[in-house]
Image (tube, rainbow over all chains, first blue to last red):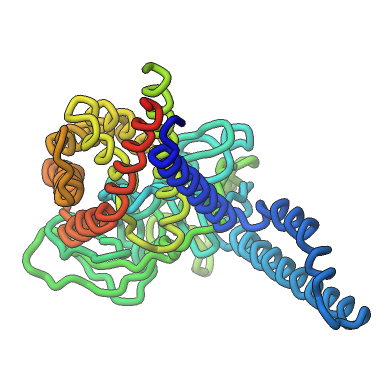
Length: 302
Length: 165
């Protein structure tokens, strides 16, 4: 204070830094939660609107009024479009075949693991234990599997996403349902799958073909993974170099780089008992019956 | 004296939290493999305070990085890594001379420590190493540090001087 020339400069810098940071914060808030900064817009409009109207030179009253109404309607339409888009995303998740009649908890992605963290891929979603989220529940998007819940707080949860190097998912590949596993890195000496791709490793040497769909195998009680969720599509099969298992590269069904609306699968357990089949106890007929093909439920051979 | 240190620590803590939140919320949506903003705050603190204070600041900043949702799989790893990075940056602490070369060198070394720790972890666990991503991360952090670290150092020096005056 005694040396104003030396003292003012840092204070100005500090003020500038604080203002810039505040601006960036608001930018981030606006980007991540559209509509959350509407209070700023409305108060700014309340403050600046009359001023603008007052200094509009030469504008006739009806022109000014009509222009204002047109602008208001345009901005309202934009808001509506954003709302409809969000609603469409939610609907696509909730009505996807992957949902399969389960109870779903729609959630929005709020944060990602920074790119500076090598190999970890996690997201934070805006539902927590108070909304009913719990650990080891499956998280899906409209197109298929996203990941599993790994930790739950009161209002947010962390999700381990496909592509995390610690996540290995048991899968079935192709129409014949060959067993295998999908991970972010090539197991058993396969080729590295590359950016944004996953590596499929079959348990037995066999063939998968390009274009075949990979679905989850499912876990006990559907935790952490529900069965039959689309994981991705085989885009290339690694050449056989004498390794123990066949490997292939899988393109994820969900665009993992642009996650926005996802859903936590809440109920995976059956509420009704599985229907049993009564075996007829009538004595075996002595006369040969015509052999009609009996429809059997094939469980293992999919 | 204690009030000055308190204010400076508070400012750094706020900066670290902001940088970590920004890296988690905004940078991934832009789609950029962003620079390590938290590390830049740590490097500036290390250059100003020396290895010990740099390590202390790095430890705290690393904990923020670990705990900022989505939290890391292994808590404490980033804290230790950033502590080492802060100490390394503190090696470029000079009392009198203020060379323009100090900040970029310190940033490069500290970024090398953080990325090197990640590579060591991947190698140790048998995971593939993303060399291109590692190099890109070091380069980008150093480039941003060219501007940000001197600005931070100047701001903090100015703050200290003003409070002393």
